[in-house]
View 1 (spheres, rainbow, N blue to C red):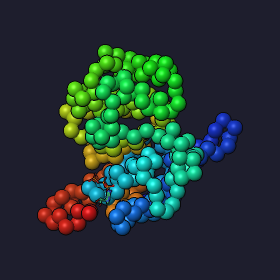
View 2: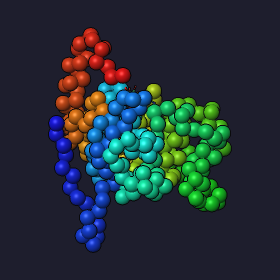
View 3: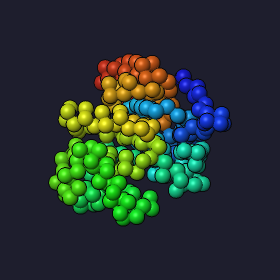
View 4: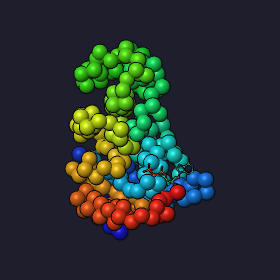
Length: 256
Ligand SMILES: Nc1ncnc2c1ncn2[C@@H]1O[C@H](COP(=O)(O)OP(=O)(O)OP(=O)(O)O)[C@@H](O)[C@H]1O
């Protein structure tokens, strides 16, 4: 197993800055099974991908990073705030985009959907409305403000979810397989939007091609970090192993 040695970022005064994301010895048990085991990750890289087989624990890890999944052991620190101790501050620092936008969208119109997160952050109605209009304009979708969310296509809904997350200006965005089920042009367009965002991105994917340009790839296997390092190195090892397993007919090792 290989672990990346994180370089310590420093602020203007030369003080060492805490990494944006720090997991230390994180273990999560669900229904008695250890789904994550002693996962440690210090990350200040701008683009991080998480790969692994079905059932290896990727979504659970994404939920831990997004503050949606309490840990049974270890600590999760986002933007210098410990999830367990200052959950509110940690949650401000992170936004999550799920695979299925229907699990995320709850409001009847696009404007209400995007504004909701901003109101939750404590913004007043006028400020939230203005920020919503601003993000719609940035994506060339001002005409969507009054659109019914249920009438949008999957790709359009996914873009609404991305705009909702970006409007909240999180320092870290977690994307859990955001492009599955989208056609090639929609996927390419959304990927371009994601590539252009200022925030740090942690993306879970089954598609190595979509993250070859990332700074770092973490391979999760049976709830543990199997390999962590530069994209080219980790993806080559990952693809080799996946192809070897794929060549066998035995599904008995599929996690779960
Ligand atoms: N709510 C739950 N209760 C019990 N077990 C769960 C729960 N959610 C997930 N698991 C189990 O935890 C393991 C990891 O699941 P997880 O969804 O994190 O995997 P994944 O790597 O994202 O998989 P996939 O690539 O198939 O989406 C699986 O064995 C799964 O069955």
